[in-house]
Length: 426
Image 1 (spheres, rainbow, N blue to C red):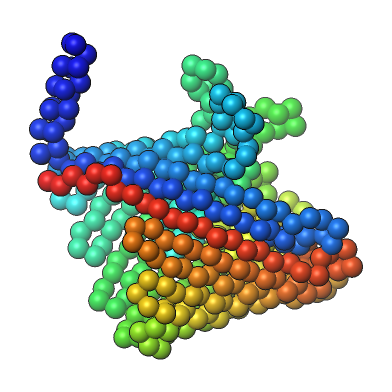
Image 2: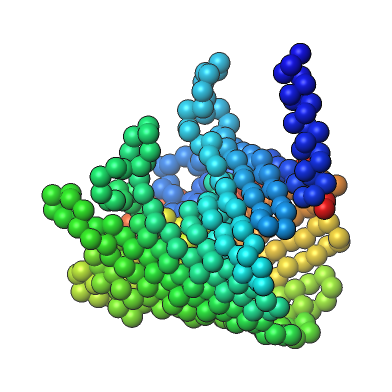
């Protein structure tokens, strides 16, 4: 009986506290089925297409008062059938804290945001949440933030450490053994943005430090890679233009000197009517033709790369690093049938910035289709993509045209539910 009184007391205390605060509780249920017959790379003619269903579930809680905000997000990624029947535990160990942060308000536009969080800016070319991936992307970082009117500045710091035993992180030294996919030991950046009525511009200055090891696998300093650039947006009436310009210098992982690496992008959109929007653009990402131990290849680091360079993820999604670069010319049309349904059609032509050993540059053409239908409380999204590879793509992916399948395609369908359990207001 005493336990019931305690629980009732906690609930009453919580209700009184919510009267002075804002509490939100929401979730996400996102199953996705995929047919993969050349997704990510060319599939061989004698290989069977992949098919499977994965589900992302999230539970998110937020708490806000004048002095601070708190947010936590739990997620699990489930692949249908991955656990044998009546197994008492999850075999893939995918349950995780996706976000856990607190933002403390200092007043006069200043605040600090600490903890595990999504870092997403502009069009997400360099820093993005990668929401398409079921697991998403997060960072453990500390931010100092300032925002006033249409001006903002974020300064971030991160120091990553390995989990080495059940009691915590390493107690001797600070070597960071986690590698791959540009996992960094340290990160610092400054992001500055100013917006006006029809124009906005931002500046990103970022440094990433990567742990290095000597031939005896002992910690041997840190390689630092600098990424600097700008994102610009202009919109007037039915016309809009966006541009990216970034450079990289310093050292990549494995102590590789980076010289002359760059990314340039330009996208134009035109709203032809209330139901049709047209787009066209070009992106040039430098490739590598430098001497051993050096590279001129740019890599877009922690952006949402899935939304760039084709939905089939042939470039810069766990691949195409330190390669021939990319020249991407694309055109798109977005048709809005009514208030709840739309269709996006996009064509992309790819070639390398540098030549392959054969002298070939042309890589191929991809067609992407995405249909979205919104219902009351949920949405259905489906897509189809087809790759038409050229000679260079076979060479790049290490498969001959005779050995590759005649059809390289990918189809998917996804259900998205985002229930709002509680939405307390001040």
